[in-house]
Length: 406
Image 1 (cartoon, rainbow, N blue to C red):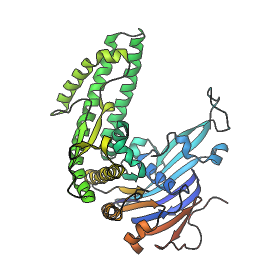
Image 2 (cartoon, rainbow, N blue to C red):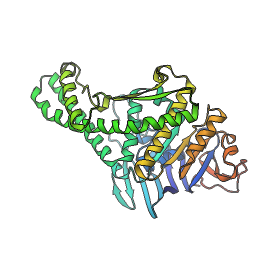
Image 3 (cartoon, rainbow, N blue to C red):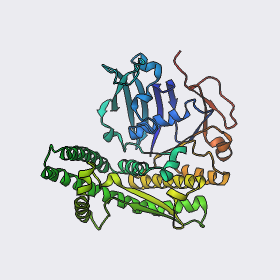
Image 4 (tube, rainbow, N blue to C red):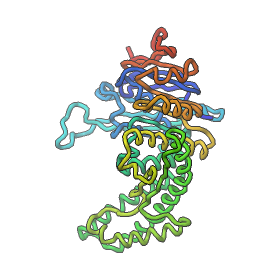
């Protein structure tokens, strides 16, 4: 059993100061758009995954006013896990750049951030934090898992497996470093500043790390596929037959050794392509997977409704996979995931999601959830960076739970 029992935020986006108690079960945050609901879930996800799901650059999480004054942004969470308590603090310290890059306007916010993670006061890396408590995020943007580029689907697999297995995360980090080094060497080869035999070392590293990642992804897909089928049938009915097809750059084989052999063959076949365009052409960084309904590729032909249901299916399968792999359910985060969904499908999703220990939901429409949960959930109204408790009917309690600093 693992859940977040307290969340404290300082200068985190539009939440200048927040100190919020949380409990197992279902908590609903509702209110207008752009008031801070998604920011709450972003902070919880950050405590689990060590990275934001919505920031392209980590500078974005520091509030504008705090950044101007050089103040730190803090995400501070208390996690209850197996009878012990973990306090996780992630800090972002703005650091002014010495100069403004060419072509960039100096608006007084020319800064980077220095990020620091501490668990029970001890400094930790992101890799050491991931897996302490797992999270699965359902978002309206998940439709891109179906209709977007392969990079989003690879990221889905990488986050899933990194939470389930710390060895996978370490291998993935090593693999990306190898790809960067190998690409640099390929550019030197193109420019006549290196010899071809210098590739041998990086080829060996690429094959060793990449083959294991391919094998691990293949094993995961074998578990995810039947889970996806069950969840999709529950959401959509038996008329649609879902198949999930893993499409690795290097075909999986019986074991890692056989994948290594196929990897070397693929590298040899790509030699001339890589010399002409100095980018590593094969490996897990080129993987993808397809979702097919009744033999039709949904990445190309899915309606918006089908794509949304398939994305929910993937997330439900992800939660099931993590619960099985880690022996405890993840924290489930539903960020505006109920919009554009009919009542029957919404009910089936909520029935599945609320099987887990802690579920945090954001919505602009309280009626979408209060009929289902009634008084069994906790409700909070979020407006202008303030969080106030309410009942299931939207009646606010006196006084804010969290407000901006005076």
